[in-house]
Length: 306
Image (cartoon, rainbow, N blue to C red; front, side, top):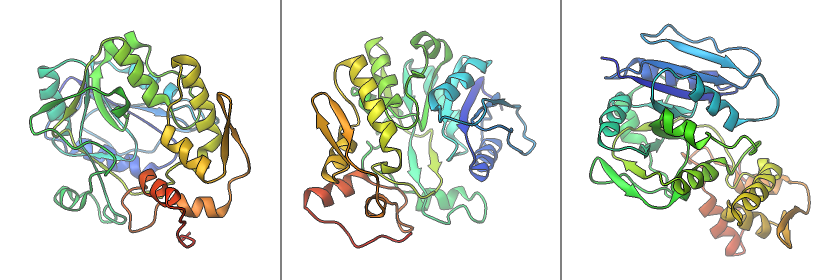
């Protein structure tokens, strides 16, 4: 069975992650009509044959342009129902069917469940029973509602890892603001734009994606300059900054200070900063809240593993 849904993703590198996403879609109870990939590199991916078409749009390498890649994928979609999945997500076999059902129930933006997989969980292929048993909910994200849909009244909860909406609504909003270059801010900006336009947000029970393990830093000290630039762009657009918790951590780390309305880098990032924020092999996800607790307590852990 196929649903009139276009799945949109984007990627640079992480070919194995994308192959797992594709295999997950191929094993869906209800399959999508197509997968569209915004390719942020110079060559398309080598992907397996699937029971649905895959269309890759090569945007080229260079500056990280997440907004432009998502917008291109949405513009190229041939269906009015869009599901956005990040490249490091594996869709549960029920994800497409769940979104198809829920989009019959409500308009607006629907945000599905996400469970984070520990290191090594995907080493021997896709085992969805194991994923469901081992996957961990992010402690800094709201849980799924008890009912198929639950109201979300705070646009700041929106994040683009796993969501669905109608293509017409996406295009009317103008998509993601491509002025947010690099890492940070474009999700909150999109949520604010949608809220200002009167769109509703819904937590979705089901429509689950499994986030594949990969080392990361939170707060993202490896993207500090773009976080600062995008915080300023958000402020100039909406009158206040976003990513406050990251900026607070950077201040406590002595990396930035606020001078008037602007945030200014004070020094280069050092290994001790990377060690503090680095996701460890026994952690399914990196946590800004954990780092903030350490900083506010005046403590730093011993140098973390490389």
